[in-house]
Image (tube, rainbow, N blue to C red; front, side, top):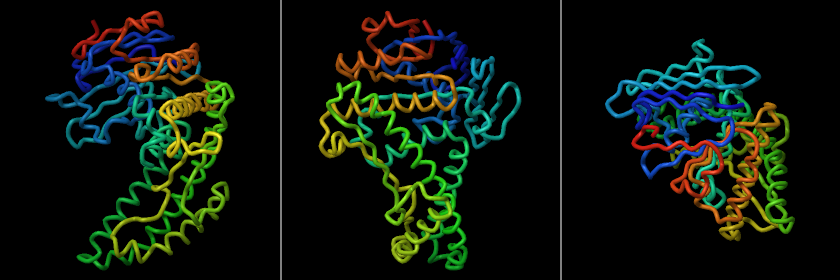
Length: 366
């Protein structure tokens, strides 16, 4: 799998850009605030229909423009394919095309351009709050399993509507009559999310332990633990059993939810943690251990996606090498001998031998 050509019109700070990418390493260099990260963002958006930087698609449109137009020629699934996304500055919904055919959702374009993004924030994800770790897992799962993407979107929509019912129940008490229907559907969809997540984290932990073992010379044992609501004794249980478990937990929190007007229970509060030789990285991990474990997770994600699709996803390293010491830089660089890679950095002299160098200045290729 590789990105062959990228064309942007009025995307972020790019008025117009056309890039012919190399199948190996593409080194994107330039000073800060020139558009290097924007370039990676466009690749992620074309592949997944999402941006990790904003949930408001209008922010992707260049200031003063009516819409942004993104196009990519991709070699994937043993043939050349085309992806196109048009995002509008107003409330008009975006438009998506795959091979010239208009699609209704990003899920219909899934698998054409799989990406794994690694940015400086990911190095600290194991020390961050639970929401950052859920975001990391959700981004990976949405690419691996389009059905998960649809379930997550429905769950978030139901959760938002339930929150509105709880907050406005004093002004509109009749809304409480439909709350049981929302609770049931939230539990049904939430059970799907837990089922997907449990299997993903099991595979991710096993693969990451291999990378961490190589990195640490076998000195530390890497284990990953998934945490969901307390009534779920077995996250690998059938979805019907998980639904019942979620209902039990929700019923026990029903009064508290009414009193606080908040959704207090469900997989939107899920988390995971990593332990090294039995000690939590979040609580006891050094900076070096935390970064090594985070690198192992990202490389494991790439391996899982390769195993699933039979093609190596495009790896995007957004200024992450500058955050690593020489030993960790070498370890990462040794893992990118195959597949297509885009690396952004401000110090080109350190990595110019890696592959094609692309210099960006004020949204233009020099």
